[in-house]
Length: 86
Image (spheres, rainbow, N blue to C red):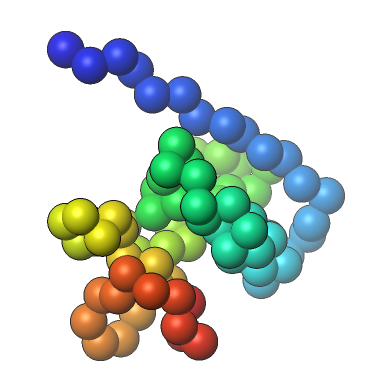
């Protein structure tokens, strides 16, 4: 049995889904080199509706390449590299 993983809940003062999504992308871009953070699992929720979550990134595993780095529900095939559609 493996040890349980921990989740960081990071409240913001942002008030729109577009703004908080841009923050999630910026965090992934700046901290993506940290193997201990699973950016494929990032979800967003409104403060008073935390049970309703919006996935940010595609969570498809790509073997040794890690996870797909494109946005959730992207067109085309998954990719390990960041592109303009990410």
